[in-house]
Image (cartoon, rainbow, N blue to C red; front, side):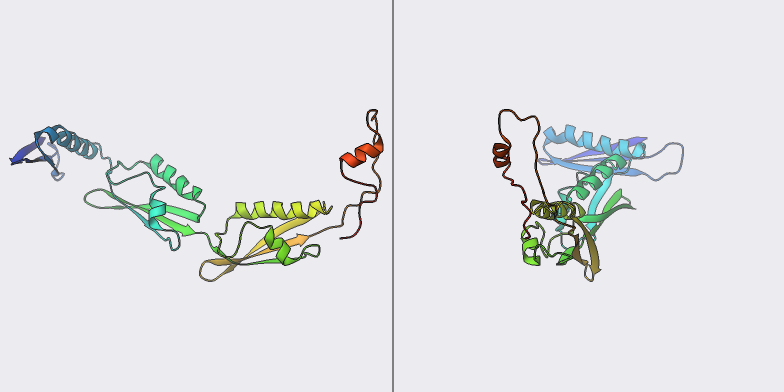
Length: 244
């Protein structure tokens, strides 16, 4: 059973609608909407009808969205990644998309979502755990390049957010340095040493391996260019393996 009233005072109108089941003892559910001018009546009726339908079909309404657990990353920045807004119907699929959007920011190790039930609807809470920041960067096992040269080829620095994908990218860059010096067997790994206050020290562990020496280069099947001309083209010479 549904009943209601329309009130008009000057240019302001309000709509009060109530709904109660006719066969059980569930409490009355009421909706109030207000607007300016009779031209807003259709919109008020639509809003009231949507709320009544949500209640009728037991659809939970989001009445508040909160972010908790962030310390360095601003709440506004996280909220911009969340598409679910106050007034939306609570849908698990949309929440899952928002969790993915927050992860894509690259600042968080873990994201949990919980809801709190209120008389008006559901409060949606995103609990985030931030990735640590880098406190210190060190190197071990490096002989060919000193620490300063190694740091010059990193895209991370102290104070950066610890991101595993970024670490792996930096390892590729360091290995490229070695390979340019003919250390093609170099292997570089990393270790994360957790510290207080959500910080971490990063250690790059280098196994340089032996320098690859080119004793001789030969060509087969070349008729247009001589061996000497081809050697000049690739900017390499025999015995090009002096130390350093």
